[in-house]
Length: 279
Image 1 (cartoon, rainbow, N blue to C red):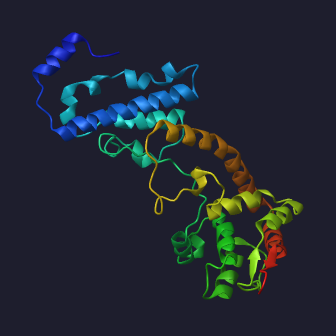
Image 2 (image 1 turned 90 degrees about the vertical axis):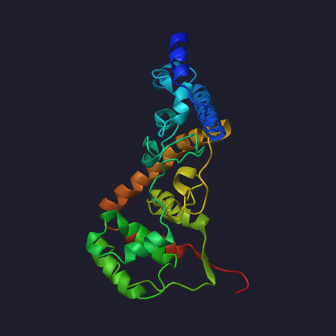
């Protein structure tokens, strides 16, 4: 419900001439709200009015006196609408004190945490193995096979073999840079061994699934802005991410229940290495 005439009249008596920046900021916030409303209406045409109710319950943010307010409660409401009806938003940006569409027109999607960066890998290696999660065994073996650990490879292999029960006491002797991993063959080899879900997990760790909720890197890329095209794209990407997440869950189940899983994975990996042409 919009403010009544009497409310507006009272507010105008308190009105102070705002700066141009404050006016532009308020218009930006109103624009972000309109874009989000349109995106939710497109995604949920049958009941979008019900979904947008939190935005209409308090319309005081439309009053001119809010131009001078330090925080913007409606910005967090806009983010929560996105989070509840389009795609998840990073929890940090759902906080009223953090999110302010008057100054920042970007959106920070809540990402899956499967991707491992080189910095995260080195942090894992420097952590006492006993303090690592039981799930860390698979990202570690994947990154080690990819050549992320140059020094003391055999030492760390033996350490993690004991910690995560890889049942592969001797570090593998893999060919050098004159070979590459054929992902097409790798996918087939994993499937033949009944562990095809590990291929999806392998891609997720590498940030190479083709889905933004698995692959996006805030350290290397700018967060997307709130536009109709972006919100529609992210909503569709979120729906596509669910089957990928399901396969990753299946991979985790295999890792925790199949005592031969790492042996099968290493065998498939070695069987998928191919010599580069001309070398």
